[in-house]
Image (cartoon, rainbow, N blue to C red; front, side):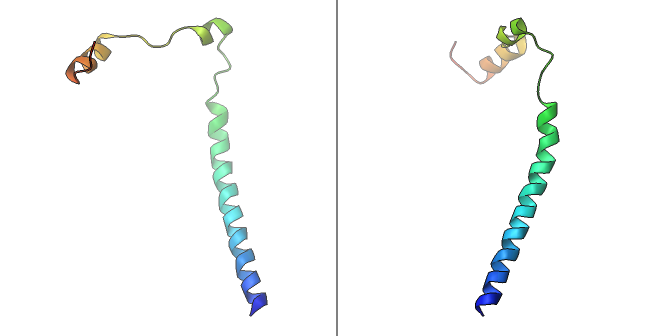
Length: 66
């Protein structure tokens, strides 16, 4: 009975490792594409948030304090 219990735990661990490896393998290519290597130092430091007309309308409609 003990040998059978160890076999089940080992098999479960194997499938758990197999699933984790498959998930990591699926995520890794996506992480590589997300990097922005073409930005220089000035572009990384510039402000990206702009309060456009759409943003002002969103704030007004949702009654955010100004």
